[in-house]
Length: 289
Length: 265
Image (cartoon, helix red, strand yellow):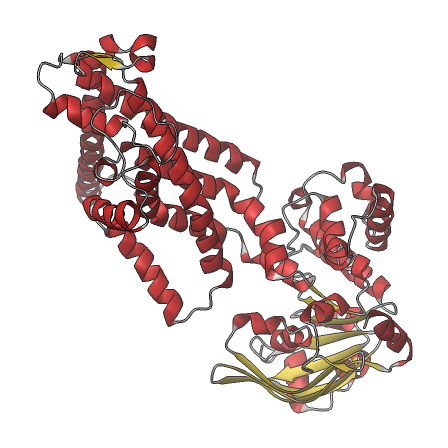
């Protein structure tokens, strides 16, 4: 009665087949990541040192360190965050908590999705037109950061809006029924519970901003500068552009140098992502609903 | 508003008074000409099959329905003698007078203390009440809902860690510091086990007199044992509104009798 039938056997075989198939796909997916990381560490690992991180490039960028680029990237990312986080979070709060469901809101949502789909080179040209020329910021950290901020706004908005909407409706109802205004509800209950998700979005934005090249190469990142930037109105070197330059634009660069730069760049991004994940796990563990 | 309402509350006979109340969700009419006079200081239960408009009626008393956006209301609703749909009515004051308890206990994901003091803080201007004032408010509210002895040693732990019964009691307790006159309860026991139901019912029974309580329930036995007057609704209309005992012993309408005996619903 309970013995296996021919049909059972066949079904079992099919099921096994699909399981293996899906597993292979998954393995395929992580292979490039492993190969990239492996190559970078193998070929560029030897060049990484404290000196490499903290000294200026020398001999026409064929030797020395990457400090100005590293420093510039941190600057650009920081200024971009200062611009995009307040705007993005405010927009997300409006869309999630206040906006009525009408055509205007739908158009705004559509615009956000489309903004996320605009190629980065188009953002770059927009940045040149708007920030460099129209607002007369010149090619500067400010122009580059604002360009990046606009490019990454959708990430912040979508992540924030989603984490706001993940806060159960019951909490809002509880507040409203006690006579809390929308703002009191947001301030006391919704935001504190959405903060982990918002921060995750912000960190994702950081990792994306760190790696972008096109939007900054016309708006504020320089090929080579002997000095560090003194203010946001100066140009700066940046890691991503530096990688492009040493790999393709400068003759006589030792092989391990571009690999080293790429390794630093990817390490920064991975570090950001891991912090984001760890942080999210920590905050989620604290939640109880 | 506050003082007048409290003065009024001692004199007035009907806490909730409605005339020709009609309500639409978009094009769907959910309430038809509801005329109700709900006596002050007693427990009135609202019964009827699903979708008959009980919850809708409840939710229009404190105007929480309006949050949905596509709701249209016509007619008169007076709470403690004042029309809540008057133009100069401040919604925050309505919500303060009319507290609401939900089907699923919904304590805020903050400490027990903060839950109780939350409403109070919303409605008090200026400086934070001192710790000892807060303690008094919290103790009074929790004693009132018979929760004080159970939670007094863990006021700072999360309210969401309490049992469902305790959470529901807490949800009632947090309404009290703002001194409401009416408490609306939308199936307050349906998420609880029989023991929790009994405890919360007892609590509600204790609160009568001081507060006017309007309670929606699917549970006929609950309506019978835990309310003084009973309203039976069907398809958005009020069919019968009498003393609870009378309704269960000698219902006037055939529909009421059918529903009570479980022939539909």
